[in-house]
Image (cartoon, rainbow, N blue to C red):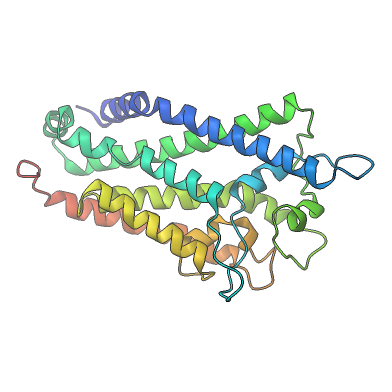
Length: 280
């Protein structure tokens, strides 16, 4: 079997099995849009007119995360429910397909490809395509919601929302255009890297344990603002363009490249020696 046919097989079957999850991602995005719309209308109910939320404002609300948590006796840690739910669900959506495929029809296809690297590369590309599809669904859902509710399809960030609704405690009154790109791309980049890392972990431990490791990484990232935890780069609120001690763009790019390269290289190396027939 050629690599093209193998990739076509993975894309077709992987998306067929994950189609319902894509619909659920759309429902999540829609629910978050409604939540933001109602919150901003409620927060400014006594104003002469309710401020409009732009396309990027809605994405900021969905992907933003939470500000740095500083432990104290009075303020407990509050989970970033929207951020955590979305990332964990996408991770869960890519969790089982490569593992199940390897233990069923995919085993025969692996033999026919006469090369384990081609099989692993195909699964990695499917993983990337599926995560990209999830974010495309989110963008299209937000875009459609803004059209229906007559909200501006704009990439202009509304500063008043950042502190009032997102509670970012930002010292900046105006945000740079770089923050727009961070909102659009960095949650996606980190999600791509973590999904590939999870797929590699499945070679070493069971899928559910691998998912648990990813959950711990995300929870630790939410609890601690530090450049060594990847989840921080997926929270635009913690960017250097929002808070003074925020994570830097260059560090985020390096983190993404490191995780993707390490996941693919480690996966290829281990998969060459992976005992498929005796896998339980």
